[in-house]
Amino acid sequence: MLSRVIRRTHMYLALFVFPWVLMYALSTLVMNHRALFTARYGTGAPPYETERTARYDGTFSDQAPLRDISRTVLASLDLDGAHNVTRRNDGAIVITRQDLIRPRRIIYSPTDSTLVVERMQHRTNALLERFHRRRGYATGYTLDTVWAVSVDLFMAAAIFWALSGLWMWWEMKVTRSLGLAAVLTGAALFAVYMAAI
Amino acid sequence: MTFAHLNRRTHLYLGLALLPWFFMYGLSSFPFAHSQYFDARDAAKKLPLWTMTMDRVVDTPVPGEGNDGAMRAFGARLMNEAGLEGTSFGVYRQSANQINVYAYSFRKSTQLKYYVDTKRLTVEDRRFRWDHFLTGMHARGGFEDERLFVRSWSVIVDLVCVAMMLWIATGLYMWWGLPGHRAWGWLAIAAGTAAFVVFTMRL
Image (cartoon, rainbow over all chains, first blue to last red; front, side, top):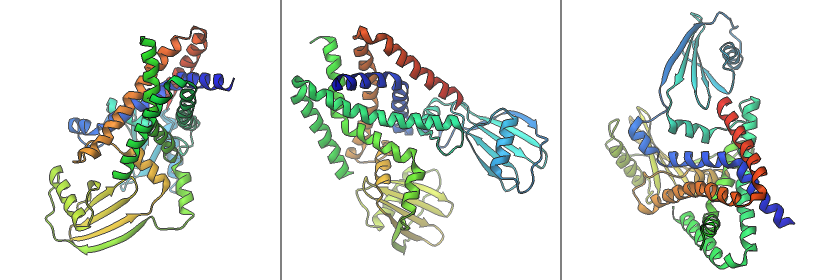
């Protein structure tokens, strides 16, 4: 009975989580070969291009926390979500909206009440890297927290697959000797890397 | 040997051989996802993260901007001055007046800072932390290092990525071979894919 539960959990968990597996595999390939993309596009994130400009007539007190200002401005643009915010030396407030598909930068200048909304140019390698690096617990947005939980679930699933895979292998007596050779070879190679690099 | 048999054995033996990497990537993701927890835990120890081991003047020509090869050679010279050899490293221009070299192995990290105006070189060792050890392994990759053996680690990283895609393909094939589980399997695939698409569109 236990064996059956382990086998079924191994399979159904994998069927549910496979989009995450695929995304992490592709994004890791992209990051491992970053030099190819750097040679093609140069270093740094893709550039931003202006999407639209607008007037923002709201006012904020001098003591208003930056985070309150950014949330209000983003809500007015219907763009509320995970973001970082800083104030430039000239007083302009720069909001970096961490959208997975379309990251944006919003520059709000209180002196002339203007908003410039810029969108990051699309690059597939950058999109995959954003996916890979996306966390969530610290943003304060529910969807991001749920995403972070899904990432935790993926990590737990990875460890469960490894352990349940070992269990299923050990149950198949015919594969024990070759399987042991595979386990020992992998472990030895890993140990050599640990010691040497 | 039938294709189904080959499929099952590929799924199994590839998994067993790459088990250490699978465990490592799984475990090391926790310190990345919960870095605030690990940082707070370490801060409570009130121990400095970096300890200076050298501070001296080194008179050596500084490369101009945009010359990656010369920057790497410059980094290697600084490493030599610091008595660090046979270690992977990266060289970065921190500012017009400062060039940093990060030398790292799985167990140890050292930071070299070169101040151009005073020709001063400082060397600092980072205190060992388990979470950094794990995240260091997780983040290791790329083919910049000159040494073949070090670069071979990145070949294994590629292999792990290809293996992950093969596990998906071979796993789907095995699932399809169990007609009694097709309906629930479709449900799991549809639910997972829908959740992933929602995250993609909304995050």
